[in-house]
Image (cartoon, rainbow, N blue to C red; front, side):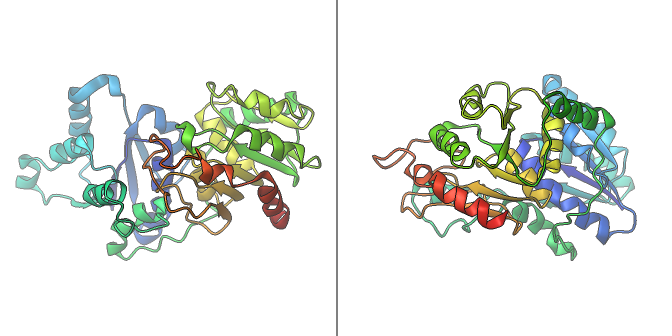
Length: 342
């Protein structure tokens, strides 16, 4: 069985879609799973031992570059194509693979598509029809659902032997050694950033959490533009390691894998912790699609009639108290949840 998965981006969606590979691998006898994605997403996919080959598409190659790659994919003669993106690029890839010449000389591959239900989203966000989209919406389940018709069991596997390159593991280990920082059972990995400000737990709450948990150490995982994380580290520099901008995508992915407990905003690496079966806490604010799937991450949220109000957190609050859904998740509440778990 030769399978092609199409998912180009984003980090969170790619990670959630990775939850299907174990089930596919168990269902079929020694399947070859290929995946086409954007070049900047490929390093994460290459850590999955169930993916036979990652096809890297550079956006700068444009439409003609995508068509050339699709022609190469066509030669692989796939038995199953899972379009987990459903956009112009994925439609182009499917169109080239299922072109007339292929249908003439060989049966075309079975195609399964993950629908986006755009009209339901319109009803949900624009007309306030809260029954138009299932809540809580769990991304991993949404990626697994179209493939369930094949009779696949998608129970999350915590024992997958991930293939992190030695360059990645050595780089992270060396960084921790250089900072004289040891990850133990009182170390918490925090992921405070998100693509949109509206999705972020307030900075003062992060600082207060560090302050009221003096017996714990913290590792901050964030991007190079997340300069606000310095304020969190400055609360207790002797026990907060700020790695914002100091690790690349795959190194951050590995750090989540090595973590014992995470506290995260609604962002891509939250789903990495979910995929790895990590214990943790997640903050759900304005958005509708960020809930985790596994049982090991406790989701904290405030029941407000105005939420969820946004697909990605790029809207404005509909009530006078800006970000009330996140401000009312207090540091004291988070502290109690952490201590109840650890």
